[in-house]
Image (cartoon, rainbow, N blue to C red; front, side, top):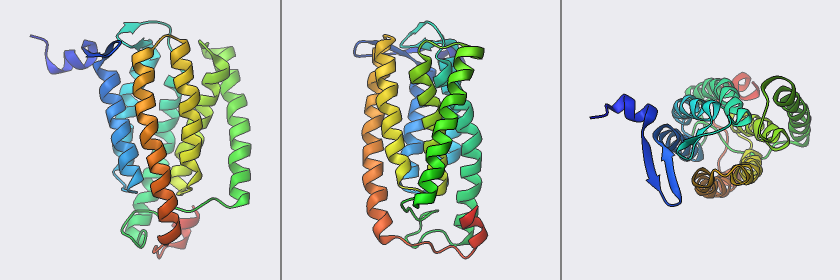
Length: 230
C-alpha cells in the first residue's frame, strides 16, 4: 500500500478531462485557503500560502502537471519562490499591524485604494519586473512561453506585494495574472490544471468585491504608524 508521503509525491487524483498530481491539487488547495483567509484579512493567510508555494514549486519545476511530466514552466515555478519572499514580508507586516490594533472590524489590515503615487510605484515595479523576468526566462532558465510567463511572474509579485500593503488593486492584478495563466496552461495542453486555476479565479473576483466593500467602511485602528508606513 502506498504511504501518505509516497502518495503526495507520486499519487494522482482523477478529475474530468484527465487527472492531476496530488501535490498539484493540495498545493492549490492551500493557495485557495490562503486567498480565503486573505479575503478575511487574517494573518494565517501568509503561512498557509507558503506551504502551497513549496508544493507548487516542485510541481512546476518538474513540469509534472495534469498527471504527466512535460517541459517545466519556470515562470510558474519562479513565482512560487518570489511568493515566498514577498509573503514573508506580508506575514511580518500583517502580524505587526495586528499587534498594534489592526483594523476597526478585527481584521489585520484595513483595505484601501492605493494613492496615485503608489500606483505609479506599482507600474514601475511591473515594467522593471516584467523586463527582468523576461531576460531571466529567455537567457538563463528557458521557458515554454517567456512572453506570458514573464507577466505571470512579475504580476504575481505585484499582487502579493499589494496584498501585503492592503491595496484593493491587488485583486485586479491577480485577475489579470489568472487570465494570462489560464490561457498559457490551455495552450500548453494542461486542461485539468487550467480548469482548476479558472475555479480559483472565481474566488479572486469575490475577494475583490469583499475588499472593495470593506474599504468603504473599515478604518485603520493601528497605533503604530511606523508599521503602517513600512
